[in-house]
Amino acid sequence: MPLSVTCQCGARLEIDDKFLGKEVPCPDCNRPLPTTPVAAPPVVAAPPPLDLPDYRRTSGLAVLSLALALVGMFTIVGTIAAIVVGVLAVKEISARPTRLEGLSYARAGIVVGIVGTFLTLIALASPTVFGLDAFLRELAFAGRIRWDSKDVIESTRGQEVSIEMKRPSADWGAYVPPNNQPNNLEPDDIIMINPRDDAYIALFSFDAERGENDDDRQKKVLERFYRCELVSILGRLQGKPLDGTGTVVGTESVNNDTKKEVTLDLRLAGVDRRFLIQYRAKDVPVSVLVGSARVNNFDRLRDVFRKTFDTKKP
Image 1 (cartoon, helix red, strand yellow):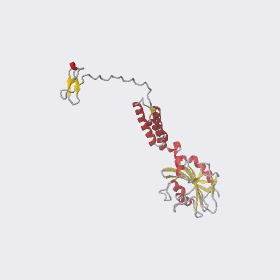
Image 2: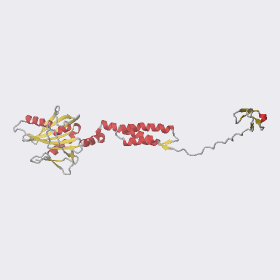
Image 3: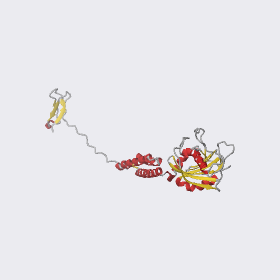
Image 4: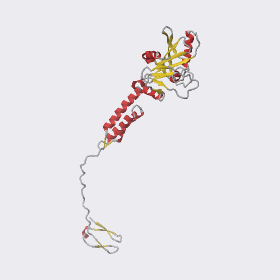
């Protein structure tokens, strides 16, 4: 095999095998050229790979999925995000099983996310299932309910004669009206609220003429009732007149006709409510007591309303 040699002057010469080991002059500058072949570097074999265990880290997506499911419970957005991130984490771990772990976290995030979404949808469709409606009512009345340790609630309207009623139980608190009330609002003397049962008791009075017949007295009572503070609160009217009237579903005489009761259905702020309205047939001024609950819960609370009405003084 001929040897390729390059001289310092730049001349390149191909030398035949028979001249190997001999000095051959450069044809251009006459310098002697080396003809000893340069030995190729020895081939060194690569060392065998170290037999070390694979380093595996926990997937960040798997941890994030479980965190979103727990923190975002009952938020829909949080639980759905947990499911999506969990699915992505499973795919990521499956594609790199020797480098990633945390499959149990990802699966837990998906399961908790599905359960949380399901429970949230049930709670939104039927808030009473988990007491969510009671919680929302407590938020709506935040700072507006006074939970006294004493059983008797007195009127805060500043009448010359103090008016009081006994609380039915510790679940009932006294409504504290805001300082700035609408000018056209007819205030009630006492309002009690039970957020858990969405139930209310109110007391108000108004002037009337003596000697009115029963029909005229009931008509005036209902007219005043539609303008009362409790109706304004439940209807979110902020003192505006009520649009429409309710349906009288029953009337009854109590205590040898000294008291009258009117049961009335009225839809307020999208909720069907039933009211028990009790008043004295002949008294002047007319003192009116009102108990209210949702229609499907009214019968259970009717006796509670009546017993509370009987504690009213004077």
